[in-house]
Image (cartoon, rainbow, N blue to C red; front, side):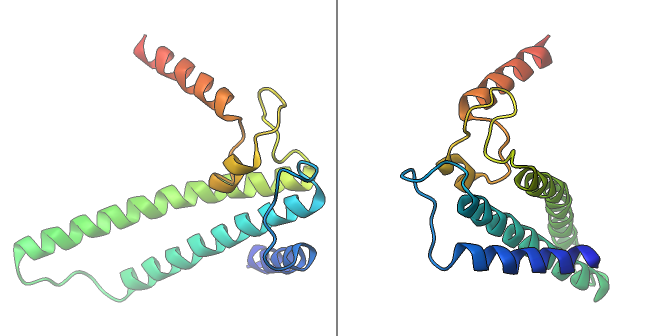
Length: 151
């Protein structure tokens, strides 16, 4: 739970540093302190929403087993639960990416491509705050990955 308290403190500090209604713009220095705090807020809010959804899923599972009298209804409910649990597993993996992005902000490496060293770009980071590569580097990586899978 110490992590949750730490996240809340970081979120409060970041919100105070950024202010209300701030949106990063191309007219300011790339990855300045205010932009970094803006992305910290995005990442921490995203992480909190994932934890909240996981808590709701856990509560639903603890409320009791599926008791549908009809076999078809029960099968449908079990399928729905399977999908829900796979979604939560993907989100669990996403939390580690969010934590990694937060560490990159702390180190001053956030927003820069890990392959080329070029700026990732504000629009890409707003769309995918855990991005570690520029669009071009990501596309090249995916092409290379596809070729190696096809061999």
